[in-house]
Amino acid sequence: MPKQGRWGITGPLVLVGLGVFFLLYNLGVFGRSLWPFVARFWPLVLIAAGVEIILRRRFPWASFLVGLVAVVGMGFFSFGEIFLGLPQEVREEGPSPVVVTERLAGTREARIEIEAGTAALHLDGTAASSFLVTGTIVPVPGETVVRSFNPGNGRAVLRLKTKRKSGFRPFGLREGDGRWELHLTRQVPLALVVRTGVGTAVLDLKEIRATEIEVRTAVGRTRLILPRTGTPQILLAGGVGETEVQVPPGMAVRVKARQGLGEVDLEGDWVHKDGEYFSRDYPTARHRATVKIEGGIGRIVVRQE
Image 1: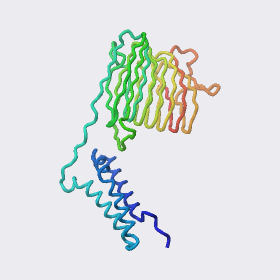
Image 2 (image 1 turned 45 degrees about the vertical axis):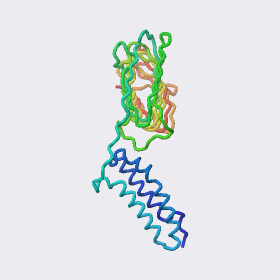
Image 3 (image 1 turned 135 degrees about the vertical axis):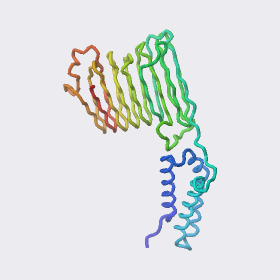
Image 4 (image 1 turned 90 degrees about the vertical axis):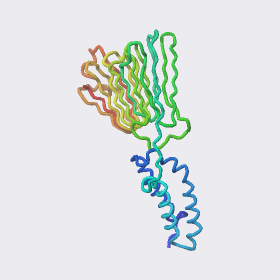
């Protein structure tokens, strides 16, 4: 008979039980109460393993019994509040929104750097005429917003990002836990750098006056709408997920793609020349953008409207 592993059947049973609990947490059954439960009762795993090692030498059925008791015990502490009418833990309120407002105040051009963590990000060009940027940021629990603003000598630099209070990112975050809603100016030229984290991003830049745009995606879905006017230089580095680039009417585009493990698709009327792709009206267009694509693992689509 082959020897049993060190944990016998206790280890697999405990892993199955934990997997079920984490799945139910992600489905919203627990709210935020799962993590206090894990922090409080994880020593039960060590206790079950120790008891199983002691008993299995004399009682072959001890492994199954100990594992079953451990899983049932975790289930009792987890679901007791639901089935036994025990006081339920209330879902914690998320962090308070951080209001972002920076005035133009003589700014002739600006550089804006945005580094979103785990969040749904939305950018557009609808800031009031006297503001460089307005909006709100709701960080996920355990994150703080870090911002710096240097008005410079007519050339402002604004940096916005979130920072973890600890080195660990919580599991099970759901859509809407983190939200960035920012409105950028249309009054002055902008160099824009956006680094997305985990989540969705909509970058509606059709109204802004962009000179440079750099977008680096991580995990999730990103939708980038290019400016209507100007001659912006655009760098798009794909991550894991899908990135859609929309080219508005009146903007011609030159695309240089370096494909990674994913795929790059171009939809519309394109001319292929020397390894690059051009809008058919690119040579004579007044407004035209150069888009350099560094493909990641996901899919990047460039679509002409």
